[in-house]
Length: 126
Image 1 (cartoon, rainbow, N blue to C red):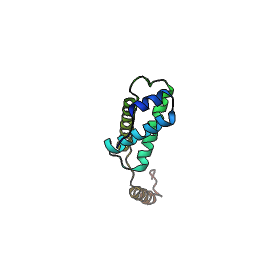
Image 2 (cartoon, helix red, strand yellow):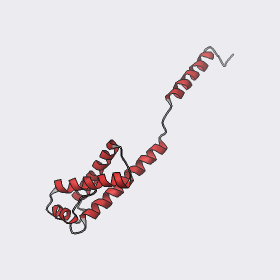
Image 3 (tube, rainbow, N blue to C red):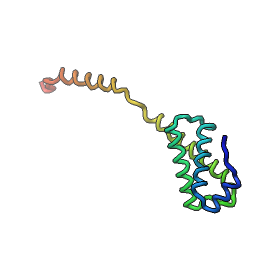
Image 4 (cartoon, helix red, strand yellow):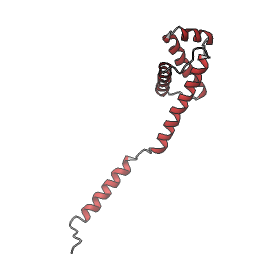
């Protein structure tokens, strides 16, 4: 269960208590990853959580987060969009980059070597 007090988060954000804010942002992204996106691999989840928090930090540094608005909603929306972007990029990468079967490569190299040895002394001029 997600235990984040929205008003306290807003107050801590205004006070610039970044440890508290980023801890809650981490918990929000963790909740989204496990409950909404059903990602249960701990390594992948950890990478995505860190990316969400780093993205939030970047937006705070650029002044894109208004502390007068609902900070919880901003973190929720930002994390959701960031997770979707990461998953989209991963799916595109998997679709584009097919994995190579090394057994077939060895066979093709071997096959090519057999053919090249067979015509080693072939002279097209004669």
